[in-house]
Structures are given as structure tokens and as C-alpha cells.
Length: 32
Image 1 (cartoon, rainbow, N blue to C red):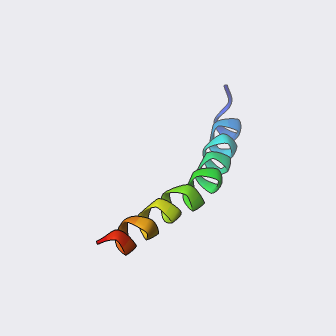
Image 2: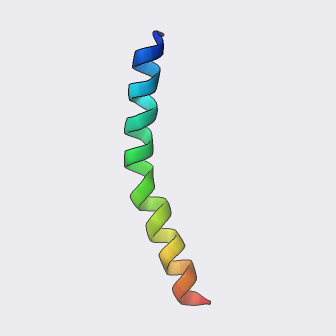
């Protein structure tokens, strides 16, 4: 796997997971 492809995959994964982590963090903050 080339380094550029790995970086692109990492960026896509981060963009996909960021809203999920942010949403769960928000709901946890509301529960407290």
C-alpha cells in the first residue's frame, strides 16, 4: 500500500467517524 493511499484512507475514516464520536460525546454530555 502506498503512503498516499494510506493517508487518503485515514482522512476518509476520520471524516466518517468524526460525526459519530462527536454525536456520542454530545449525548454523554447531555446525560450528565
